[in-house]
Structures are given as structure tokens and as C-alpha cells.
View (cartoon, rainbow, N blue to C red):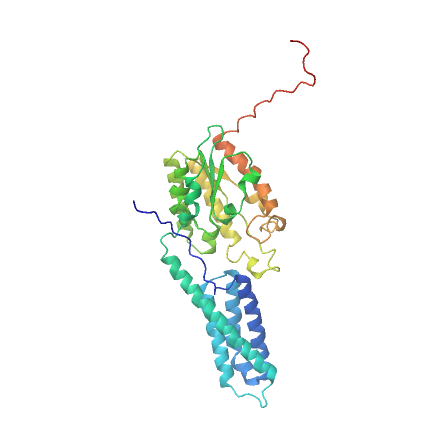
Length: 355
């Protein structure tokens, strides 16, 4: 008998820098470049366009961490700066502090080169992965899933990191709610695993929360809508009640803690509202339940309420506590309320003396 080999998601290369490390490196590189003009006056004029290019690449990496193109632009412009620094006349004697600054920039260029090469290698391995939708993630949990209980309708929560990070057993005790979220996934990747992680679990309903990663990756709206429609057709064809949740708002409220938490450039609020409007209309047209989290999570500026998210994208525990009752109400619309708890007989305070 042939053995089934389950593929694993492609791990990042160890040389890939974390977004916060890239942001710190950007700040330091810019600082050193601008300081170089103090010691080498000719360099200040010659390198001005290069420094502006570096700043622009750093801004792009703050908005969309891990992107290859701005990483390449950052590296190329840093190399151009170092080439200019070697070419322009230098004062004599050359200050030791300036020598140390240039040496540090060369070390930074080496780190960025390794980071960029690792990014490309990771992308290549992801493209060649036999399991691009990460079906292996839940293969074993699906196999070990308990049998259906007629008294507890099974509902699959299907989505990206917002679902993945939601500890359903804490917010919905004694319910057969199954978490099948995978962080970072788009609607297209979710569509690929809809059969394995939804249909094959034979749920009464599925609650789909997706779309924010599609917007961040600039996937065309028509493609997002098509993926919604195909998941809806699959659910309907298998007699699974469908709940579509609105895309949550995002915010820039926490960007001072981490530049990567500036979320609105990558996920424009207007795009989120437009996608939610389409989704609500689609649910109305097809008689699906539309679970509108958005009004309960948004503030007066149109952004994710600051106290409901710690990073401007994912709900914190307070945010999930607001979402929980809304999800319960939507689920009960398609599955009905849970059966009442059986009444336990009261204990008698005094045993009967009658026999």
C-alpha cells in the first residue's frame, strides 16, 4: 500500500528579516546616509536622489511588509550610495566616525542582500509547493473529528487569521463549532480547500469571513466576488447553510507602536466598504445570512476601534467578545436555537422518613 505523504506549508528562510527588523534597518540606513553628507560634502549632493529612493522603498515596506520589489529597490539604492561614497573625493584625514558609518552601511547591504535572496527563494518554494492552499494544516484534525451530534448543529468557521486566532471553545462553550481558519489566506486559497475543510465535515452551516488579505494583495475585486460566489455554490449544492461575514475595518491607531500597524494604505477603508456593500447585496439576492460585524467594530473616523484591536487588523479579546454574540445570532438564524438544558431534579434537604 502506498503511503500518503502530507505536504507541509513552506517555512520562511531563516535569513528573511521580520518586518519590524526591516523597519528598524530602514531607519538606521537612512540616518547613516544623511550623516555621510556631513563628512563628505560632495556626497550630500550626489546621493540626494538615492536617499529619497531609499526613503520611498522603506515607506512601501512599512505599508506592505515582505514585498520583493521594494526590498530590491532598497538594496540597489544602498549599493548605489556606497558606490558614490567610494567615488567622490574625501577629506584628509578621513574621520574615523565616517569610516565606521560606511562600514556599518556595507554590513547592512550584506544583510539586505541575504534577506532579498531568501525572500526570492521562499517565493520560489511556495510556487513549487505541492500544497499551495495548505490542505495539510487540518488533514489530521479532520480525520479525528468527533461524530456529528444531532443535538448540537455543527458549524464551520472558515476564514483567515481573524478566524484562525479565535479560540472558539472559549467563546462558544458546549457547541460543535469547528475552526478552519488559516492565517494569511485569500478567498482563492480558501476556495481550494473548501471541500476538505468544510464539505467533508458535513456541517449544518458555514460562517465565512474572508477578503481582507485579497485587498492587501491587490487581487481584483471581480476575482474576490467570483470566489465568494463559488464557495456559495459549493455550500448550497451540499445543503450547507451559508453565513457570510463582513470584512472587518482596519486602522492606523497603533502605527506609533510599530510602523507595520499602519493598515489603511494596504487595505483602504473605501475598498472594504465597497466589498461589504457587494457582499450584503449578494446575500440578499441569494437569501444567505449576512453577518455584519462592521458597524460594531468601526469608530467615528471609519477605522477599527482602537480598544478592539492591538494591531489595527486583528480583533483582541474585547473585539472577539463583541463578535461572539453577533455570530451566535446569525448561526441561530440558520440552525435554530440550541435545545434547552435538561432540568435536573432538585435534591431534597431531608430524606423521607416514610418507607
